[in-house]
Image 1 (spheres, rainbow, N blue to C red):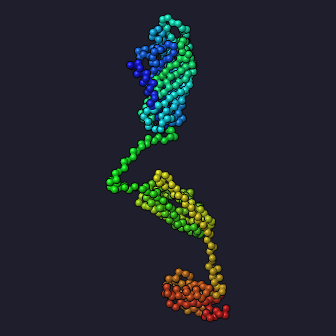
Image 2 (spheres, one colour):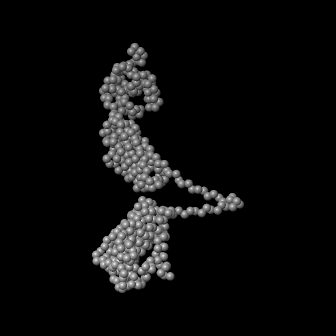
Image 3 (tube, one colour):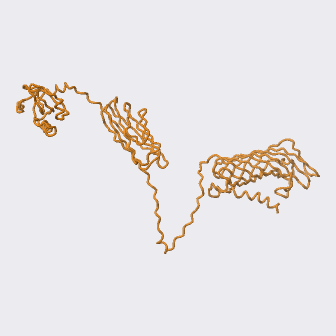
Amino acid sequence: MKKIVFPILIFILPLFSMSQNETKWDMQLSGGPFISYGDIQNHNLVYPKLDNGNAWKFGGAYSLAYNLSRSIGLRGQLKYAEIGGAVPSQGDYFQGTVMDASLQLKFNFNEIFGNHNAYRTVNIYSLLGVGLSNWDTEKNISGPINHNPLEIDERTTEGFIPAGLGLSFRLSDKFDLNLEGLMNVTNSDLLDTRTKDRELDSYSYTSLGLTYKFGNSTVKRRRPVREEQPKPEPEPDTVAKVKEEPVEKEPEPVKVTVSSDMPSELEAGQSFGVTVRINKGNLSGPATFRQVFPNNINIQPLSLAGGEYNFMNQVFTINWQEMPENQPTLKIMYRAQTEGIKGGTYPVSGIFTYTQNNNSKLINMENTLKVTEPEKEIKKEDTEEKMQQGVVFRVQIRAKYQKKMSRDALADKYNINEEIYEDYHEGYYIYTVGNFSTYEQAKRKRDQLINQHGVPDAFVTAFKDGKRVNKLKELERF
């Protein structure tokens, strides 16, 4: 019974498995018996008897495989072993050593004929290749022979074809246990040093090996999806009792916005304040706000909304390691100085970067700053000279005979923030404000001085070429 069961197990077990193919490289070390099939052998058994020490020889192999796809791999293999054979009835046997190198294609039957499953426990594969085999064997013959004995004194190298089946048992993501049966058919009849019945000698290698898998594949591993069994429909009388559970909706992503009240136009040399509002909702995590300013503009921060400030090479930066959760709006305030900048139109670009749902987000900001040159200062002498020409209307607030009054005292008394003019007319020092081209304008100024500044006796007067006119009716002749 043992003579039948053992060889059946050796050739049937390879039909049930294959190694995993989620990594690019497989490296395997294996060992097992090398059995010769030639002219010197026990012809009654596929495998010789276990007590036949001349026929049972052992060796090992090293393999390195590259997985071209889930279903096909390319494997290189080196084997070394002792080898022997015997004809017990005649007392003949041979022995020696053999080593070979081969290149083999590996076919994954489970992936070719079934569904992909990277976590399958047992997998089946086949092997087919070509190689070179080198051996050194010698014979020992006893008893009568009717054949042509052949002594081999030197090592022989011949081509051979390896073919077989294998199965792998998944131990972990990195290791498999392999059982293989490989038949190696040589292109020679000299392996057992005897030429008789067989044209080509061969030897089998049945091995148990450990495979290490390395090198990540581009294919992502996923566990097999289990098909859910349909739930039985409730009976009609119980349908009304079943309450529909509310479906929780995923929260909609927060829409982040950035706004700025930077002025679009100003005069060179002026300073201005800016408030930037970042509406972030309940977002948290790291973030960065950055703006790039033209040369000759300096930034003075006023409020940083919990971030860290930096201004270097005209780049204004605020970093948050963690944005505050309790502030749905981040408010950044700063003041900009424009001393030394020339007139022109300057772009002020900026960005705000943050993280949402583990993805980096970016918002661009574009502002344009138009800087105008200030008007040249008009000298007071030029203004006064121009005022002396033509007819102008003023509002007289006080007059003092032959004695001057303090204009600063008058300004403080009546809370006047504009210039008070002093003129001499017919023995009086008169004090007026305003410089209007029409009587109606001067009249409105008079009413303002009476009602708001407490000048009870203010009245409108006129000047012609810098000289006070006694009566307004005298203007008719001009």
